[in-house]
Length: 250
Image (cartoon, rainbow, N blue to C red; front, side):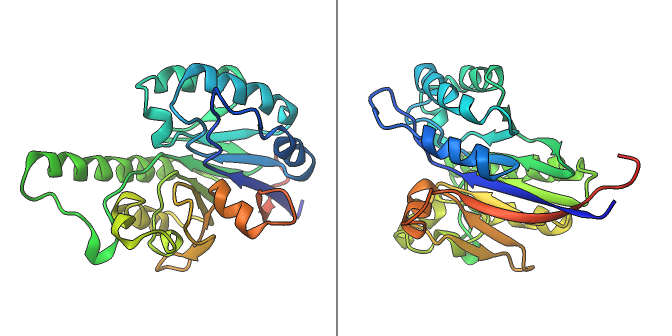
């Protein structure tokens, strides 16, 4: 068999809330018609409450015929009930990744939340107070989770799904003073080591829609406000078409 084209749809920062009347069911209906895989890049809820994710799962049923893969974002941890949030999503058919991987239609997907810490010369280092060291350790731990997940993928096409940004370029547009809280350059090195094909993240609502790592890997900021800004005339969903080779034995 030759190459086939797989269409990946991605969106992040959908922020489902108990008080919100307007949901994203039409967007998920569009995804069900338009893509083969749907990726959700964190901040699925406003406060990480079970009732918020219940509403999301109900709306996602319209896309139940396609694989849906998600990571959590910082908002999903707000109430300290992230394990319940993940359990509800998984019961609803969503594959939630946290240092885990899955293979769908010949594409290997590694997912982690990521963390802040800054980029390049602005990277926070583990020096001084214990609080600073704990912050940096969280960033290091998330980068290690990403590396271990990518190492387990055997498919030649690898996708990284994050919430926090791995490069500076896609947070440009936000106030520069908060860049260090929007992502971490420590997430970039594993992407190069394991030859990732593309990266999706959210979190930077006013950031740039795309950029590239220092090694040329495309990175897409799929935060809903960003997609609404660049897709003013259409559904806010980033769609990426990838050729995937399937061997005759599959």
